Amino acid sequence: MRIVIIGAGPIGCYLGQLLKQYGFSPLILEEHPEIGIPKHCAGLVGNTFFKNSRIPLPRDLIKNKINGAIISYQNESFPLIRENAAFVIDREKLDKKLCEGLEIKKETKLLSLEKKDKNYLLYTNKGTFSCDVVIGADGATSMVRKKSGLKIKPVFYKGVQFRIKQKVTPVDMVQVHFTRPFLHFCWIIPEDEKVIRAGSISPEPLRTLESFMQKMKIKNGIIEKMGGVISIGYGETYKDGLILVGDAACQVKPLSGGGLYYGMRCAETLADCIKEEKISSYDSKWKKQIGKEIRSSLKIRNFLEKRDISFLEMLFNLAKKNHHLIEKIADFERHSFSVFSLARAIGKGIPKILFR
Ligand SMILES: Cc1cc2nc3c(=O)[nH]c(=O)nc-3n(C[C@H](O)[C@H](O)[C@H](O)COP(=O)(O)OP(=O)(O)OC[C@H]3O[C@@H](n4cnc5c(N)ncnc54)[C@H](O)[C@@H]3O)c2cc1C
Image 1 (cartoon, rainbow, N blue to C red):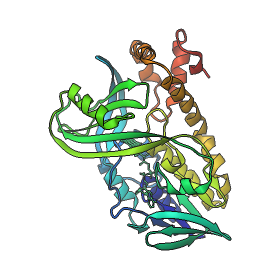
Image 2 (cartoon, protein in one colour):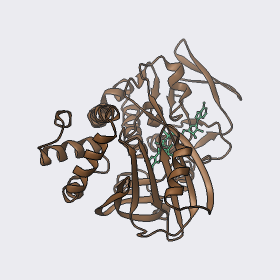
Image 3 (tube, protein in one colour):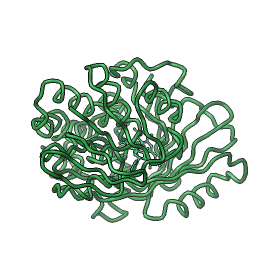
């Protein structure tokens, strides 16, 4: 079976490695000349990231260990202490590690595709490729998704991040500053004692980040700038030998925009389906695992995005009052589960939508 994966991002390469382990020889087409560049990730992953990976990943990808978060809104903050909650990783190094030993054609951009008889014809700037199975791991703005006719329509969010030479204390806590509920926030992630990653997701992330930096009195020291798109949604991911995985499939946490964990789990499901010659069951199988979590988080996000700023204030104060409960209940990979558990535990004063 000739399998072509579009996109040598972390999910396309992780899938490529799993398929290789199962005896397949997938070809990966990547539009850029270097794997891992350009970057578009804050590199924050949960503490099960390494344990859950089916491909052994070296611990030297870890730049920092995170023991909690400082949550802020306007001029108020509260800490959430969660020992060993997360890692800050070197995303470029991760991508480079995952691509080792795979057959990748770089600087090869998919322009269009069509199904002809039993094959897919892939039209690129480097000629036409033919395959039985085409997998779109080509990120948030996926060309495979656009050309597929699959019923999946993401909502897009924009994010930017600067790496900055700047001391921060404590060095083991991330800072999250909300401007509006959920996918409108700024962050500071300490990379080590001397470097921070400061970023923003919002309708105008650059402007939001610049004014956030002003507020935090961060003036100089920018080492690196990057930006990207996040695709949030839920829909079809399989049709007649054409498959979507990772950001292309919106396998992304709707309340934070993190995509590595879900994308990797779904790549595992896809690799298993291909191995067992049950490709058509991929869509239902990954949805059985994380579909409910994504749909519930989407509902929460849609609900919160319609609220005004006074609602966010109420929510912030409620969270502040119950921060010990959040420390116990919060689950890095299952946000809606955390929100619903919290709502049930707090009870009074919580809107009905937050009860399942
Ligand atoms: C600002 C920001 C911060 C983030 N922070 C985090 C975080 O802290 N933790 C986390 O888990 N997630 C984070 N994410 C999300 C995370 O970056 C993505 O979920 C992850 O990169 C998805 O991997 P992917 O392989 O599906 O897609 P991508 O990483 O986008 O890879 C897609 C690949 O396909 C290639 N490609 C695209 N189109 C074509 C084409 N037509 N032809 C050939 N190749 C093509 C691209 O060049 C790229 O190499 C963040 C995202 C943004 C924007």
